[in-house]
Each structure stands twice: as structure tokens, then as C-alpha cells.
Length: 189
Image (tube, rainbow, N blue to C red):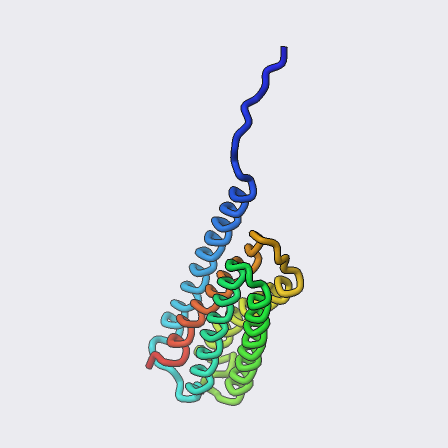
């Protein structure tokens, strides 16, 4: 006599998606904690004074570029949710391009920082500048790589927009971090 086990009516794909989302949010929260620690170190190490050598216009341009890229990442996510994968792909590409331009802009910032005594890596403010922008640039590069992977490996199946959703949420974290870094490095005086 065999006993049949009752079958559970659980939608495994929905369960997996919920676990994926929970894992992503836990990772994002831990990364926010990391950025909070780095940003607070600016005030501990250097106080609230910003050297005059900081290029305010470049910082503002980088901020506008990154916030615009967040809009295209969001548009890609919404397009994928609405099963418009052509528009989703187009907005992914725009986001990738703006991310690359942001990294080029950070390279300009670093080049300028090397030429001023108050912002060189060996100075207290330079240490903060290079650490914050370097860690953030690493996050931007990882976001670009994720978007490139999604761009070339995205399935246009009916309910498979998790890749775009997850990469867009990661990108929003990167943007949120910059929204805190920008005033910390460029505006506080």
C-alpha cells in the first residue's frame, strides 16, 4: 500500500522570482550601507570644506548624464514589462552609451585632480575624491557590463523581463549613490 503525497499548487517560477527580488533588494541594501560608510568618511577625514579646484560644471554634467541614464533604464524596464522588447533594447543601448560617457567624464575628473595639489590622491581630499569616484565608477562599469549582457542575451518571451528589471534596479542604486556623492564632493562648502 503506497501513500500518495499531496501535491502543492505553488507556482515555482513566481516563487523563484520573489526570491530573486528579495535577494536583489538585500544586496542593494548592503551596498547602500557601504556607500553611506564611504560618504560619511568624507566628513570625518576632511570636514565640510570643498577645495576650489573641484570642477563644479563637470560634476553637474556627470550628474545630469547619470540621471538621464536612469530614465532610459526605467523606460527599458517598463517597455519589457509591456512586452515591447524592441523599445526595451533601444533604451538599454542608450543607458549603456550614457554609462560609458559617465566613465569618460570621471576619467576627465581624475585627470584634473592629478594637476591640483589639493585634489591629488596623496592629499586628504584627493583620497576621498578618488575613493568615492573610484568605487562608484566600479559600480557603473559593473552596471554597464550587466546591461551589455542583458542586451545580447535578453529573451523576448512573454513573462521573462526579470533580467531587465534586475539590471534597471541595480542601475538605480548606482544613480542613487551618485546623487549622494555629488553634493558630498562638489557642493558642500
